[in-house]
Structures are given as C-alpha cells and as structure tokens.
Image (cartoon, rainbow, N blue to C red; front, side):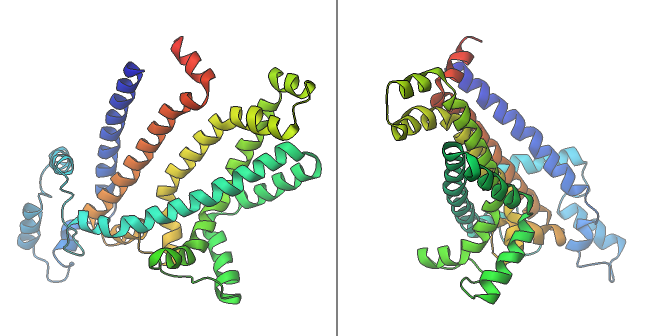
Length: 316
C-alpha cells in the first residue's frame, strides 16, 4: 500500500510538471502580443517602449527561462500580478473560487441523487420503467450544457420567474436560489452518465451467484438490493462520480459565462480575451491540479470500496 501510494504521488508530480509546461507554452502560443497589451495598445507605440515593456516583464527571455521563472514563483505561491486588474492573481482566485466550488458542489449533489436514483430504479424495475429511464437520460445527455442553460433561463427564469438568471447570490438560501438553474444545467449531462453506470453495475452485481442464493433462501428483495447488489456496485459508481465531478471544474467556463456568475470560469474567459496571461495560466493550472488530485483520490479509494480490485492489485 505504501509503495503504491508513493508511486501515485510520484506520478501525480510528473503529470503536474508536464501539464504546467503545456499550459504555459499554449497560453504564449495564443495570437496576440502581451507586450503590446501591457504597453496600452499599438497607438503611439514605439520600438523603444515595446522593448522596455518586454524587459520589465521578462518577455524578451527564452520561453524555457520564462517557464522556469514562472514555475519557481508558483511553487512559492506567487502567481504574479494581473495585467488587466493590477491585483495579485492569488487574490483574484481567492475571491472567485468559492463561487465555483459552490456551483460544482451543488451540481454534484443533483447528479448523484438523480443519476444514482434513476440507475437503481431502471435496474430494479426493468420493463417499461427501464426503457423510460434510459430514454429520458439519453435525451438529457444529448443536450449540450449551454443549450440546456438557454432553455432553463427561458422557461424558469423569464417565463415563470421562479429563479434569477444572473449572479451567485448571498447567504445559503440566496446561493441555492441563484445557483439552481446553473447547477441543473451542469448536472443534466452528468446524471445521464451516472444513471447508465449505476444501472449496468447493478445488473452485473445482481447476476452474482450469492445474490441468487440469497433470493432462493427467501431473503426479502429490498434487503437483497441494498445489502448485496447496491453495496457491490458502489465501486464503479463512486469512481465515475469522482471523475465527473473533477471534470466539472473545467465545465464551469460555459455555465458561468451563460449565467453571469463571477467564478474562475468567467475569470478565465476574460483573461483570454484580454491577453491577461498570469490569470489565464493560474486558472488553467488550478483546474488541471484539481482534476489530477481528484482522479488520484478516486484511484486510491476505489480498492477500498471494491475488495476484488484490491485483491487483484495485491497479486501484481
């Protein structure tokens, strides 16, 4: 276990190192010169002023040197200063990250409850209920999140007026009220995936020999489902829920823009449009780090939920 943990941490650090270089290089490969933006535009821009700006922000140094300087500062929790706002990037992230985490947490609660519930219902009831659940979740999963956002805004925000269509709200009740439509927009696609995984895992677990023996011995069906089927199906369900939640950190970009929410997703869009490189690099690095950490935790927890995986890995 200790050897596997050390191996995973080493792989995590190597992945973060490679991802950080890709993020740094890809942002600098985007069209537009950040030195021109920092100098205030091309109007009355002289070569001497442009050279001064490049030297001030180390933009005249080789890409590898710039990357090494940036990575060293990131390791020491210095994410730089925003070109656009002039504030520390860490302060901008600290102000916007809670809203994004609240949105992801709310969407996770929705797709876990609705997705797992629908999957269990389809696996237990079968027949027309199974067909209805599969059809409904297929329809939900086929709708892009921005299309779902527009439809929900039009129906529940404009026509019925039940929910606000912009902002993140204040306080617990206000936050839940404001984030209901954005969270539902994000959860629709995810619950389709989770319901399918739950349904298939339940069917596989129900086909096990010990379940047939329990059923032949007269154990109540409710107890069979809860203790012998759902319990053995938790491994793939929890794993997929963790992966989907990790992917949602990047998926907030579209939803925050559609609903005018001040999170890190909308911050990233504004940073890219204005060539605010320090902010764009920090947000992308935060999203990638969150995804890698979440998938690593899922990989470590999975054997604890499914003893068969633990036994198989112990023999390797």
